[in-house]
Length: 409
Ligand code: UT7
Image (cartoon, rainbow, N blue to C red):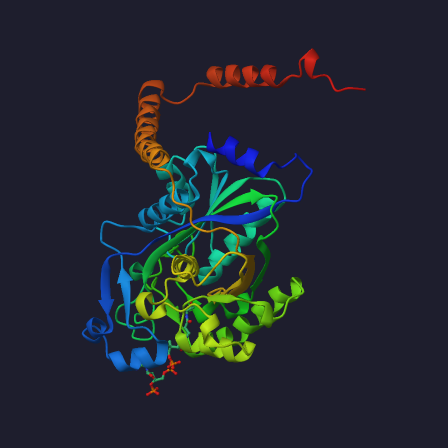
């Protein structure tokens, strides 16, 4: 099994060697449908020139009606696993960062876990708006470095077009859909995700928010106004400040300075915010990865998409020190320092076939579980008190320590 192979490769002694969390795979899912500024001109009182000059955006992508935050995330994850040449069964942990989940619960991560057939993985969501991917990366890498898990999947996935008010020119020009995923893996080779800083200030919560639709009281009427609302100017001011402070803070933690950075991957919110960050950090713009012109602001997906493109185009190379930095609703902001070690290694065709087969089996397994649950409910009815007592008795007797389990004195 791949897990065994990988574990052998990294040769970690239990509780012994220092562990590092490396990014060993990455994948993106970009919806095909392009929405241009000219099309938005038909919807609200705006124009292409204004949008380009004030945001740097020329076009963005909108998910197909059949797609959801889950399906985009699944496709990005499958590409990342393929890159890493790992199977879904190798994943111990899935963390999804999203600002546009299909449900308050179940977590998007659980639905993706089911679709992938990642049967050994714990899965949950992180809600930190556009900083979510950095927060999720911080959690996953800490779990790996602490020895709690070996392999983690971190996904940023969005269908923001579904929570955007398409009559509000202050927001609808910005937000878009897409997904990006990283596979993180334990290694004894120094490098990988080195430091992550995370910050929040809930006093600015109303500056950028999307009410959930939850009723204000148990017998109240659901809030009608559930779409994204933003005070653009205030968010802009906050963003230009924290992009600089978070980058400096994460570098401080590693005893590095801005001159040690090879590449900065900023959250793609507005080209002018990125340019202000470059000025604040006294770094040339060519150190910054920018793709906002093509994709707009994809919230949690923007950083992994930009990283994946930069690796594929050779802008990020082995041994590069890269800073990921972002901000978002909450307010939240954060940065991660990564020493990039891994280049894309094409997966073997045979293992690709195994993975494809695994995904088909995962769908069948999921269906069977639903059918089984249905039959159990229909045929078994509610458990009787006798059945519950018998089950409890069996549980207790099986958890009693046998003589062999006696602790050593
Ligand atoms: O992931 C984090 C998400 N959020 C952000 O990063 C948002 C940060 N903020 C921004 O990117 C910018 O504030 C915006 C792009 C939202 C707005 O740009 P701005 O340069 O801050 O414009 P503004 O709000 O100061 O508005 C300037 C003018 C106003 O007109 P008046 O009052 O000067 O006559 C607006 O009504 O531009 C007008 N305006 C527009 N005009 C054409 C606002 N939106 C538009 C528009 N098209 N789409």
